[in-house]
Image (cartoon, rainbow, N blue to C red; front, side, top):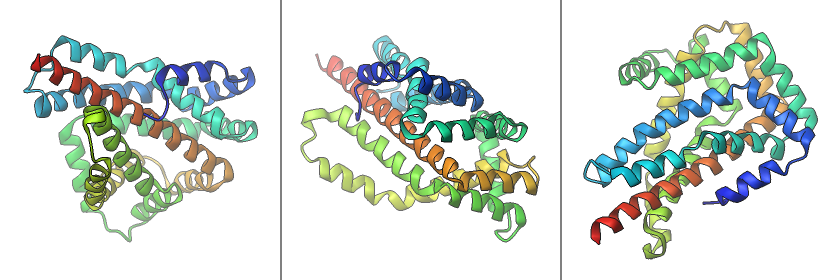
Length: 266
């Protein structure tokens, strides 16, 4: 876990008031309350998967309570908001606020959140995957989505974040008893090609669905913003915030599973 949770919250509260105000306004414009709510819903699904794969289908009340505590809405939103103030200048935050408070910015955020919620339904995600596989790669829509993905380095950044979160889960799960950390890392890196392929499919499927209502002019405006210094700073801040947040969550989930194992051995 890169940052202790208590330290992260304390540091956030200690940020200058002006930085807080700007960061909070940007978080509001980007609807981070909704984003975090969606992530918590996904976390509850992940809880069930962990129970089925590692805890014989039942983690018990202690595990359930720990997971509820780990997926803390206030802390998760604070960590992402802190990343804005930490990684962007006040001018960059102001420019990002202007974009995301605009009609197009609000439309983009709403479309992304709606598509993310829809992906909770496996049938819809499968339909989106099939639509992606059936889309000609030289079609204007595909090329615009591809341009957006490349402008934000979404594939590599998401793959790195996924591998880091998995690594932190094992750190929490095995702790000091995990003698060969390098072997775990090597094992995760050996899966990088598979993770990259899965991430690529997910991103294209998701964005082709989410951005379907946008016309070419709106897509190009979104891409143009992503390529600005402000857009790049925002993207870097978001990935840093998400990576640290998910590393912390994954570490604590691993530790929670380990605690259930230890309790069952007593």
